[in-house]
Length: 270
Image (cartoon, rainbow, N blue to C red; front, side, top):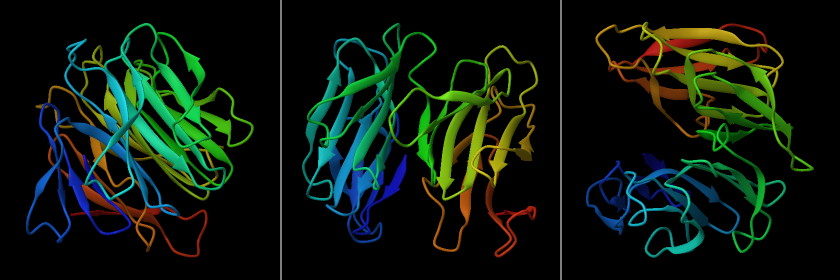
């Protein structure tokens, strides 16, 4: 994980390692939390950070936890904890509705939940073996979820009232590893499912909030155990660029041509 707060503080983490923070642009670093974190989100109005703990499967030593910080990562408090689950897969703050979403796994009780009081109380949207999605993103009108069940599902639900998502996209033998949404523009990166012999992964995009989709890029390095669009910027840049990288070592930036809603995107290899 890499995340930059609205204060400009940089956070980095990897599975099995502690989470580090730098308040001076990366010149110096110190430990922010002893546990590893996969995804973070921020309520920029209150400058509150939320971080999903992702550790190796070793219950009851490590369990699914969501952390909150009101001092830019100097200290953290636990606002969600479930001893039946291993990880927090994703977390997103919905600024318009002051709502916090999480997805959590693994195991029979994995699922999605939300909180309308900054993590004090939680309501499960759905739970079970096919739930606990890998990522959640919020567009102008919808909440998008990506699945990791070898079906490559992208699910979409209205932002309000909260409800379970409807599948609008399938990429069989893939996982939807991440989703990024900005107004009506949606991007999704896949990781090849464990049963698929061909290791290619896809970068998918929609300009109409999921009504139609394009496959923009394919990562087809046959030497990798799994093809994946593995890492991404959690949101688009000020100029509308998405940054992403593959497990085969390629990095890209992509955006829609400014002022042309239906034009092809411009992929730049970095």
